Length: 127
Length: 387
View 1 (tube, rainbow over the protein chains, first blue to last red):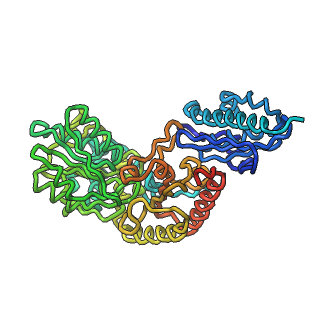
View 2: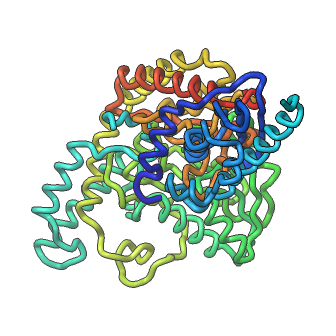
View 3: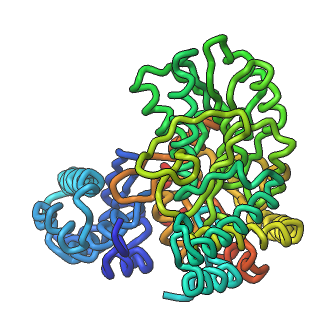
């Protein structure tokens, strides 16, 4: 290992994960693999995500990626979740390539969250 | 970053000021090649002899039985390959433990690839070797046993006297990796039935890059290096006089300070344990009271664990070792802790605290605070499924 393995962004998001926690009674997704686990919860109004929270049992890069995900997609249209890009988030946070598999666990959780939101929206009465 | 709090003395120690001063003086005044046949060479040779006498004094052995090496890894390689190869015509069965340092484990794996049969002994729950397991494993064709004196991860001290006696009774050579013992606990090679004993300088306030191998009187080794007649042709190469002088001074210091060091470390270990023992799910890896007092290895058992890599980062500015491979490439958990029966998750959440002469009670109090907070913080952001 050469030098500090964590970028300034990873350190900031790991130390101050403003979106760590959970929301009650909203769409939720949980995924675990490779010794790590991630839970995402999202509160939506109409087609917009108004609040996002994460919980993670993971390495600093994945915790930072969860925080970065929440910062990016909170207050965004639900359909923007399709734009979640593993390669982009790895570049932004300087995640080492060896950890691609771990970031893909986040991607899986995001997909599950998107499906959970769709399921919840389908159950809501149409105006 | 805040000033580092160093609690990783089992990885390496700072060079003692007296050692640094001795090395500086030798670099200036005795830089000559000790093999040279002139006044300068004789001066350097005297420095080497004095260092051998100091190390021999620390270990209570004849200085002539010591070979200088680059450190414990080289000593282990020379001891294991040297004996196994020398005795291969008698038999190719060798024995070691699963919890040995990589510098032993990997040499035994290399022997396996060269046609030797290796028996890997399992440790007891506290990390120690049950002598009955060794007795059961010894065979007529067994030529060599390697057992470490003090385990580098958990501090467990093996009963080398009993192990050595058992090996002697069967005519089997015993190699001991003493990297975590020499200069740190009393080691008397005049009493221990040991054939080869590995030593390194940087674990007890000497410089890095210098170590030694004790070779008992009647033990024959095959050399691994060739190229000169130095050190009875067993380990040729120009001797690094200033490093040897540094190791000698470290041995002098250790001999003088050993009892005080152990008292100091015992107090610190107790303070640390008292400070963190109430954390839910925490347990000691290895032994609490009978182990080397400079190491305390703890982990979180059950489903209350935390990620080891995140724990290390959350502990900053504390410098400690984790039970995982500690690199971005691998989440492989400690094979030593796995051998003790720990789960992958528990092994990865394990932290080895190791203390040294400069460690203060204030350092321990800070470590207690940082560790307690880090566990609490990481548990707070973990999903319910894990908590």
